[in-house]
Image 1 (cartoon, helix red, strand yellow):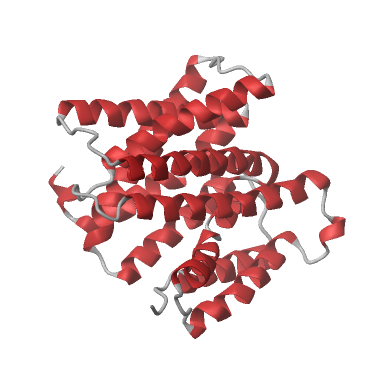
Image 2: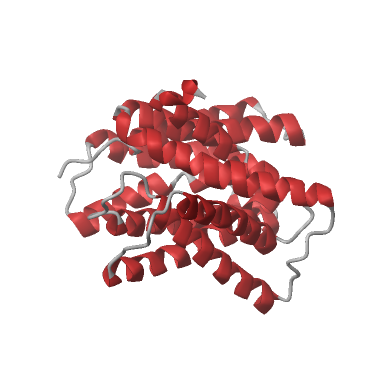
Length: 291
């Protein structure tokens, strides 16, 4: 365990764990909403137990509770859109699209915070679109309807995740604790409640069909959601922005690898080139803007 004293190792180990998230979703035989529910339910329960054992109290202001309520909604939407995108376009592309959140974060910084994007960030936007075009093809009308929907859901995931990140950042502005354990626990339980209500409205079951499905869902909630997020949160403040950017790239890169290895996704040279260009664009877009 002494290896995890290294913040860089924690950061990249966390990113690697989270990269398996779309794999668990693809493996389980439950609805997209159900898999999302169990991710945040199992992860949220584990984090709540950790807070009880360490005797951390939920001493948060009314303002922070209100902000976290919005975070719950945005994270539930993130999972709702992303899990459907995974089913339509696969773990690799859906995760790559979700990481386009850096561009929506950049836009929010310009509009809401008055930040000035660096020239390289501006170049990253058309670069990312070009990479995406190389992966999915530039003739949108020729794509199957489900594939089109998967791409749209992936981009909506990016919007929802960027909104979640912005609200979590606002909730953490005056936080006394260095790790967002309390906030992530609250958002996890809150998102589980929202997704549970969504499942009822959709008429889908929350029942877990087999022990194998239960194993995948536990791995999703405990390893990818709970442990992965905590490792990243503990390592992120102690590494350089370059290392943080590389960790950001590790998740979609490994998700593409798992898509090819576990699900035999065919990849042409053009698609590989497009994925590489999109990943480079995500890295460039993640560079800090000028204030």
